[in-house]
Length: 150
Image (cartoon, rainbow, N blue to C red; front, side, top):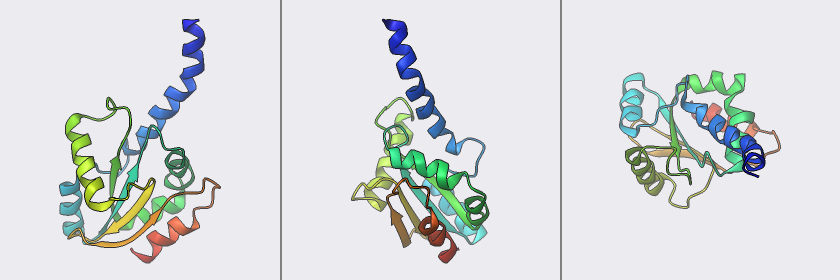
């Protein structure tokens, strides 16, 4: 019985871990102050991404349909990328990182919409945003957000 449970949960565990890999081997930062500092130095806007990596199906699909594309990789060169994860599993992030992310949630995503892409200038002023994802593979509006704010 235990083996059956493990077999049934294995794909779920693997997919949750895979979704967290967005910050590994990428340009995504997880600290707001670092992102602001880099944005000022490089004269770039910040792309703030709110996700629920372990519970939000549209977030998981957006990772695959947008963030792993050549179009995103090209346009993201114009931004400092900031990844803000609000997982339900509290063991995914350190307590300090989760508190930091919740502060950003309160400041920049008070409606708690997931996924949310928000463009900020180097001073933290909100310039543009796009919330949600229909999970149909069409990411034109997301790419347009990046194109018009670069």
